[in-house]
Structures are given as structure tokens and as C-alpha cells.
Length: 294
Image 1 (spheres, rainbow, N blue to C red):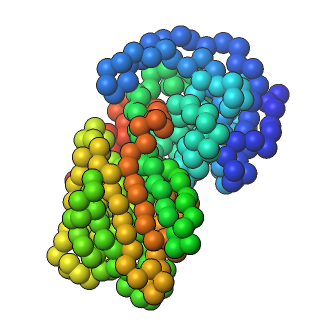
Image 2: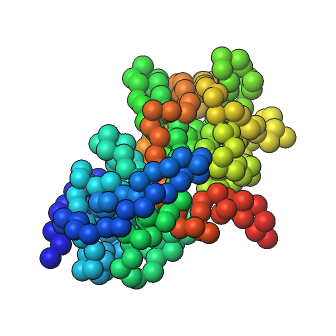
């Protein structure tokens, strides 16, 4: 019998865990060519949707799982939103483990195809590893309070009212746009470049590009500015003009801070995470394929 406990991501996901008894030990190279031992102990997390819960209990019948704390890798059942919740929860707990997602959501861009079988250990052992670094966002509110959070996809500044947002944009201390007027602006990682960034007509970034996408959201002035592609060593600062009259909120993935005056964003090198994908179904290939969808 699997032990079911109310632990893991803050959204109420169930964690299933028992002791893992038998595994196959293999060596697998990551996307940079480095060699890693295949995980020996797996934890299982699932979202609250009915399909994910049912699939989790079926997997628990034919696999042995451990707790998140004891695991060497994590299996997630759900969609992209649940994957992001899981990654953020591990960042908050400072317990970052490689994650192999199985899609039981809608799009599943960050997930692998779900096949009801008992070969999870073998699939994880054969999986390709991709190391991704989130953005670190520091927001300073109009009252002077400071909030820090990480974003795996993007950091977005958005107007709070009918008033157009007016935002100054600096890169590495140099003002590049003195006043962007519009609905807002976002800074995206390669992982997030096919999400909100793409919907805002931003560029798709290859996973190994070491670049960031700076994309305006419904710009009014300068109307024809398409955004910019920046090295991921860049530190980007946003300053809100007339913040009391034109309030702006900042969102780091799901975390929102309202009434901001200034926002600093840069890559968090100390928060690297590893995503695992089936061969032939890897994230880098899907990012390239997105550019050819018609």
C-alpha cells in the first residue's frame, strides 16, 4: 500500500510515497554532455484533477515511491501549471530535485506523454536532462517594501487600471527606453518564450540560446518597438512613471506584487533546476517546432 500524505506543493497536491525497493542503475548524459547517475529513488506528486489523481494511484500500485525529502527525482502528474507549482514549491523549500512530468493537463509543453505503465524507473533512467535557470525578481513598492520571487517563465509588468502604464527600461544600468507607454512589458526565459511572451508577439528562444526576451505588451508609444533579445547575463530595471496615477503590478509566474515603483530582474544562477524528458520528446525540439506551426 502506498502512503498518501498532504505534503508537497502549496496548492494541496497529494504526495504518494513508500520505500523504493528495486531500481536499475544507469548513467545518462545531460544536454551539456555531463554524465549523471540515474535517480534511484522517485517521489510522485499529482494535481487535484480527477484524471491525475486516478493515474497516480494506479502508478502507486506498481511502483514504489519515497517522500519528496528522500527522493532523487520527482514524477509530476498534471499540466504545465502544476509543473510550475511543483518547481516553485521546491524552490521555496530549498529542496530542488530533477522533475519528470507526465501530462494529464491541457497543453503539457513542459511535460512528457502520459502512458499508463509501470516502467517509470526505466523512463527516468533514459531521460534527457535540461538545466534551466529562473529569473530572480526584486520589486520595490510605492511604500518602499521589497518583495523577491523567482520566475521560471517570465516576469510581467501590467497596468492595474484603465490608465496606460508608463515604464522606463534600463539594461545593465543604461536607460534603453525612457518611457514605454502601453499595457506593460515582460522579460522571458527561453522556457517561457513560447508562453505569454509568444502571445505578446515576442520571439521564441532556443533552450540553449542563453538569451532573454524583452517584449512590450500592447505598446502605444513607441508603437513600432518590437522588443529586444538580451544576453542572459543582463540585469534589467523597470521604473514606473507616475505610479500613484498609473499603478502597475508585477507578476513573477504566479506571484503578484501590486503598486510597484521599481523592479529589478536577472537570472538566478544559484537556483538551477533540472527537467527530464523522454528521448525524441525533449523541450529543445518542441521549442524549435513551435516556430514552424501554421
